[in-house]
Length: 180
Image (cartoon, rainbow, N blue to C red):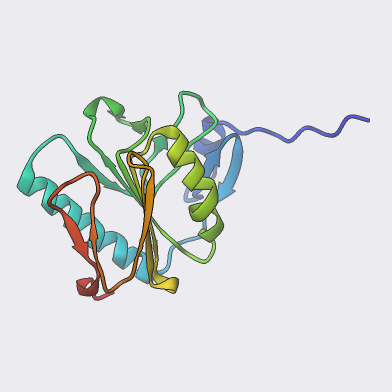
């Protein structure tokens, strides 16, 4: 007996969601997103400020985008994500809708509802799509997991550490000074 086939969603379904509904699409599966907590948003703002200030001082083609910002990881209409922070260094990947292809650096700030997605599903998708650097910032666990996919390594830091940014030689974030 054949089993019922799951419905596969596309980016068209994402754009047809009711106004204000946030969701991501991974391999045709729809994942709704809960609203973020205040601490999450505070961290997001601090990171964006630090990264944008660094990029402004150094110049170069990289740009930083906070969520909600559309990232179309694959060359299909079945994967659409909104990382908390995306840093894109290839301006050819950017258009009016967002980023087409893998950002160079993605930061996800873990919320209770996103833990499983951030640590497993997105880790796999980001690695296979060609993201160079992936940070999982977990305020509840006082932990920052840093995956440098170019060097095929992972490191763990705490909110008391300086965390080096692997795509830049002279940039690190001092988590002890974030005051969030």
